[in-house]
Image: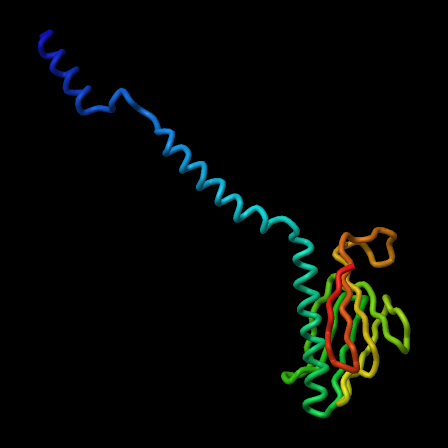
Length: 172
């Protein structure tokens, strides 16, 4: 019987796990490197998400301004942009008809003829000659009410030059 027990012990030690269990130093270094590489790629994309939202909205708005200015000149007709501060939206005429979009970060509009407007609504006309006046749109990444004393981290200005038709985005 003792002989049989000894044979069983030898068989399990040969087929079972070896006495050298665990990972080598190279394997650990490779795994840590892969984890750090993954973190280096993903973590920066999460920082500044709020400012990314603001910049995305500003670029979309600048694109709408270019579209309205260029389309009015090309078609030789009047197009309109209406900014409504009450419900944070804009509406404009496009080929498909009237379009409406939500603009969360727009704080005020500066028109040469009317000054700074940050309440109510304003209608801007684009004629066959383009925009009739110099336009400035102020965007703020802070979600605080527009009349509060709290200033956002980023103030972005979108300017439309009526002479050149160029739209410029500046960060203040």
